Amino acid sequence: MHGTLHPVGFMRGVMAPKDRSVLARLGDDILDYKVASYSTMAALAASEQARRVEQLRIAKCQADEALKKADEEKVTLRQRVADVEASLRLEKEAMEQRLKDAEAKGKAAAEEAAAVAAKAAAEAAEIEKAEAVADAGKKAIESFLAEGW
Image (cartoon, rainbow, N blue to C red; front, side, top):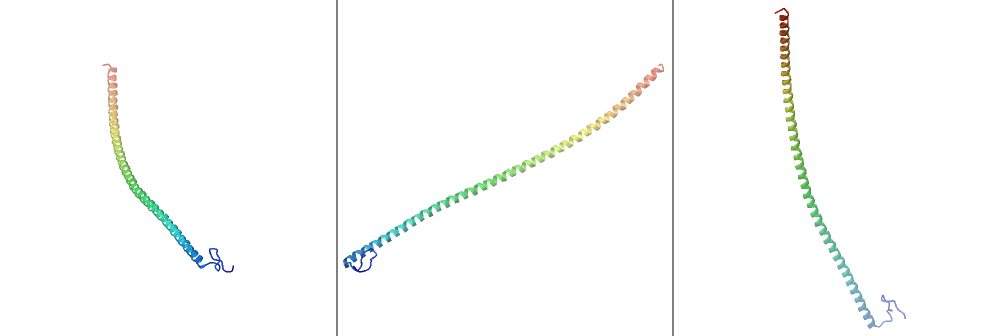
């Protein structure tokens, strides 16, 4: 048995031509099977890639919706902050106005109290004058009575 070893394992020099054609057809079938399995694997890989692309597309849509919702919420929160700031500003202005009004009332009350105190001092001075006149009159009457009238 002389000859070279065929890839399938048979000796080349010893085979009949009919056997060689059978082997050739078998080799073609094996090649067809390999091509089919590679194309099947490629189709599976493409299918998997398409599934991943679809998942990524869905995730992108969800992320876009979440971003849109976050932007809307941010606008809402900014509006709330602006409303609260405006409310606080108005409340501050109202409190400042009440403080000014209270200061004006306090100043008016202080001026009124000063006027009342001045009037009371004037009345006290008049009372002292009247008491002095009354004391002088009393002394005059006492001295007049002491003289014997």
